[in-house]
Image 1 (cartoon, rainbow over the protein chains, first blue to last red):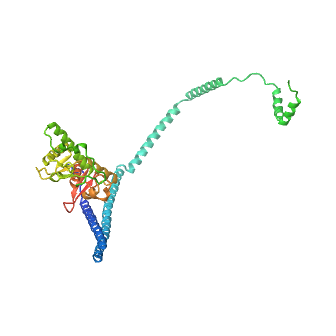
Image 2: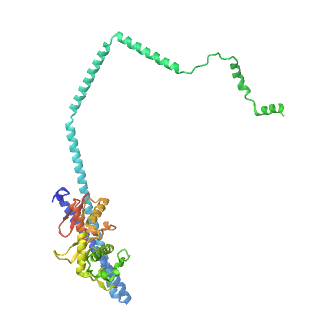
Image 3: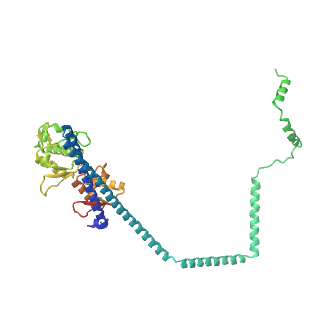
Length: 213
Length: 188
């Protein structure tokens, strides 16, 4: 069947795990059975006690104790089984991880092989050479730009600067043209002193002034 | 099986038609019969869903509810029940399960195997159980599936659901040392 091949082959380990899990299921079913018998013996013991049949009640209780022990032993076995199953399943996971690491490492090695250090060094050298060559050419071209060209370029630069400055000047606000009055200076010195009139002084001044009717 | 109370504790609500004696007699008029049969189909599915029953043995079934109504002292006849089941088979809600050619035992799919399949797959996805070995037994009866809808599913129906998954490439059934105890691996 196509489906069987494309999805998940069942390995021998899977079968081994299955067998263990089937065992676990069987143990659990066994436990359930024993529990049922145990409960029955318990009920029976109570009945017998009520009837007064002590001897048989004791027997029933003994049987019950025995079954309890069976359950405990089965619990231990289940624990062991579970532990084994868990260990196996975990090591399967680890195997996958290891395999993944192996694959990754292989790919990396392959990539490194394709990109050898000497090739990269050579490439860097070639590139540096090419850049140096270009720079040389630039220098030659630059130095060939004669003195007159140099002057013309400098003049153009000055012209541009002048234009910029003119534009800036026109943008400025107009300052007033007249000369400043002399008094301004004096007032500036006196004012701070006058203004420190305290509230008291103000009240006295106001009282001394005549009220307007 | 005689009681109509489900594990949930609530009794099953029968439809009104259930107390109507002619409901248990196959009507001669074809269109009436078709309607009657349809109502029986619905009743079977509802009853089986409520009580979580999965299979029917026809000979036994006619002696008990829902096909036998004690109060009315009426019971559906086996051949009439057979016709009802045939209709369910046509709808895809049942399959004959006995020996080939006989129509004595059937599986009742009040939930189709495809839906069960999806539920199981969903559960496995949530629990991170893909690519691990599970026993078919623990799927239906294990502690891990205790709260799930498909817990307690009967073997034949469960097997069909797993077959659906296998045909979709989402599961692989296999046997270990013994052929009776099957295991299954579920895939994403």
